[in-house]
Amino acid sequence: MEKFIISAAITGGMTVPGQSEAIPITPDEIVDSAVGAHEAGATIVHLHVREPETGKPSSDIGLFREVVSGIKDRCDVIVQPTTGGGKGMTLEERAAVLPELEPEMATFNTGSFNFGLFPIAERGGDFEAWEIDYLEGTRDYIFRNTFADMEKVCAMFREADAKPELEAYDVGHLYNIKYLLGRDLLDTPVHVQFVLGVMGANAATIEQLMHMRRTATELFGEDYTWSAAGVGYPAEYHLAAMCLMLGGHVRVGLEDNLRVSREKRADSNAELVEKAVALGEMFDREPATPDEAREAFGLKGRAEVAF
Image: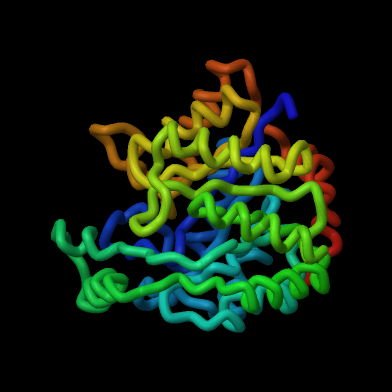
């Protein structure tokens, strides 16, 4: 596409509220933040939910339904719930959004790996006790996505008629995607999101992005589209610039990065999206509308979801 698709990761399932006051917590806050991100230029909003009282990541399908319905009522952005969830959630809890909501699109994690957030707690901050326990608990946390798990989730995507965004955190995950394609468990063209910068997986550097993209091209030929999410600042925008130059798409948002510049924390997801839009203008690329992305991805349309 000449135009580029901006995904805004609104709240996340591994970040904790004590990291930033800008992270939306309640369903109303998440809906408002998602609508604001769309108004700023986001084509897709990637969604987790949280317990309104505490801010803890949650898999509560009632909270998901409240959020996705609220967003759909207010704008035509592509609503993309997670199947990755947060620490401690079972596969059944994480993936319940597929049969319950039948979204146009959802994320699909393509391999297991260590997922370390404990350095955030070590740096100190105004954290609640549960937040410190949650962050420290990732010293012994493996984000599980076995072949059996992935095969099961593939079937759930097909049953829901939803397109997976295949999140690859390391180069081996691309070979996992190739395996699933070889078993006819995924449909082409696939859409791959390179998620770089998580402690325990691949680094958010230009060199590693190029390695991931080169490997994906060797494995999938022209049967894929791609985007990249850089975790942290300035990685988010360094990778975004490379995506724009190389014909890819872009992900930003408070799930991945809390800063709009080295000197300033972001006040909202919209602020991060606005910077991505401005970056696109420098490369003569403009954001795609949700309907343009629906056509490009072959999505079923917002009228066909179960919310």
